[in-house]
Length: 155
Image 1 (spheres, rainbow, N blue to C red):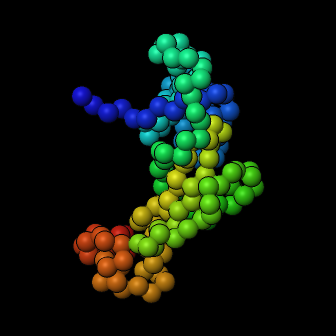
Image 2: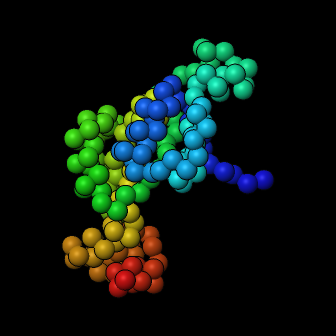
């Protein structure tokens, strides 16, 4: 068996495709109308077609359950945050810096699915190194091996 990726049930597939392409920055690689596959393996399926395919009833859905996150990484995290502010995207909490030094933010897609976007880990390591952390301090903070950190900071 092979896992092919998550599929999100959405109310308005055009609105969701717009969100994921314009805000998150992925591309649509297959569009079958009621189902779309995006880069990274994420798929979108219309609510109505999913109900038809599963024989479930409309009251089966509870959007915004806050029990699953889709995780993405962004190289230009500060630029991404500016885009979220301009587009007035609903955030879940606020931007945070995790104990290992990574900037993260959580937000909602149009159907209330949680999206977590974290700063690209290589960018994080380079940023922390420029801020003055040594290789040993980075290894302690990030839980990464020293060899991996050295490779990142010298690339």
